[in-house]
Length: 402
Image: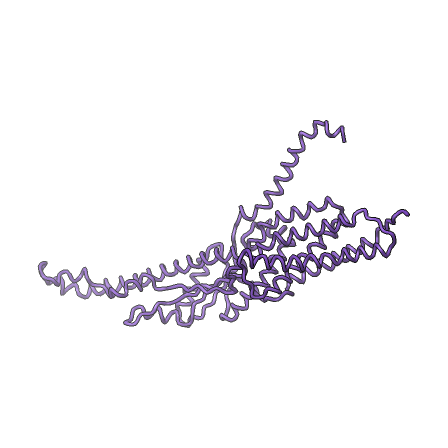
């Protein structure tokens, strides 16, 4: 140790740290810095019974930006099921009366056509804002396109009327009031100018609304992970190099070790949920379900980390510290918004992804504690617990010397 303390090699340690930590932390922030939203699944429902609906739908699909990938649905009910299943992040809907209302703009009783923008808010707080802006811009583009088409039609009618009146107007003297009529001819009544300029209006419909809880999964993530880390480390240190008077005493201690993660989980779940109502003004429709889901996560993560420490010793804790850094940015974005490398090779197996997505399911979708994500976490819990007990059985019992 003394040789190492006095060695010039220590000068190179910071350089090595920079090379290693640099790549680790750059990879951790990669999804936020290189956010490349592409092919975000968006629903499209064309309920319009007129020809204009199909024409506009084709224009939407063909002119969609790289961000959007349309999926067509036959009805709003089918769209709703897809949103509940988190298959799409939003949708555009052309109602059944769309064409008929556009046609009324040239009558005495005009009605503006409405295009509905659906936002699946609970799927992802970040992507819902991006999708709403993109779909609003697309409706604005269609609005401009339809307005130009209508005004072109009006212009043709104006030219036609002027041509029909030309012989009469040419016979008038320059001082005659009728000579100025040609410049005043327009089929558009003054009170309809605004309707022709903006023939379509948009209506935003939010589905699986988040209210004030949009960022709740992110808010709970840190306390969930650090509670698990601290709990696992304490369990490991409490049993490390411990000696026992008998096998029975060791069995009792190992049993207590296996029970404590459940105690930590229930405590963290209810305390974190209660703290959030007190400090963050969160209001939960299902308080107990939220707390129990967090409890499952803390228990599963604690046992997962503890099992790793039992087999690979204390230095392996660095794995889970690094996982925290990799997860912070990744879990806030939809997979379609990440670089392909990050999406394909990192995010799919991050433990905290199951926590965040599962909590979204509890808060905004099925509202059930047992869902596809909590089932994965329960498998992690059982496997980790089995590994811990296999290690307990495999190691020799250190007995106290009399």
